[in-house]
Image 1 (cartoon, rainbow, N blue to C red):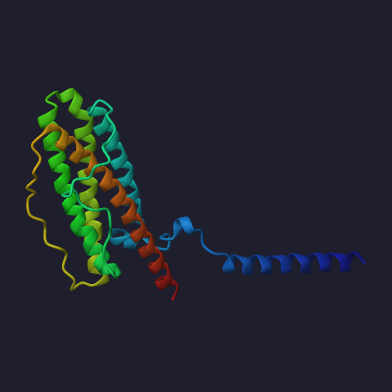
Image 2 (image 1 turned 180 degrees about the vertical axis):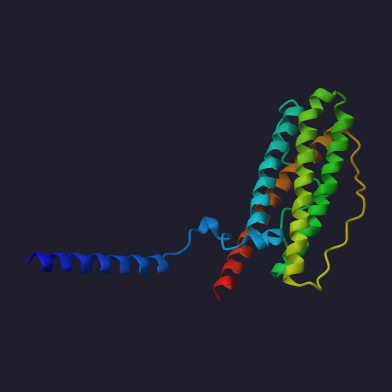
Length: 216
């Protein structure tokens, strides 16, 4: 009788182990790690790294905006957006076109950030007032450079023959008055933050597409 019970218990344990292994194959991967399939060899052109970099870009844009508002004595940003400020959209009918648009707009936002810095130096001569914003803006431009390198890598990995967009010409802005410069500066940073969020969605879709490829 005892031998039968022991054998039954062993049989039950084996059945549960087999079922556990089966369930581990059918459970979906967590959505928050959709790029986790990439190996260390993929780091140079890693979608996961690009997503992390874009998250950092959005975070640092928030920091730059906070410092900009603080420099302006906590005056809230105007809802006005001058026509010359880049849009937040990512245009393109396929992934290559979207990556090219991200590349071009990245360079454009970097140029506009430099102009915002120049305006702030004209408006506020005191280094102690300007210091925190200029530091945040410099970090933001560095992050944009890193993102530019990643996007170029993604373009070339999708199609080595596709060229990256040419650099935009120097800006020629019409602002003469202090109010115009302040409105412009705030609009650039706000739009950069919103653009970063849209870039995140593109990178997430790229991650999802790469996961499908890796499983096929």
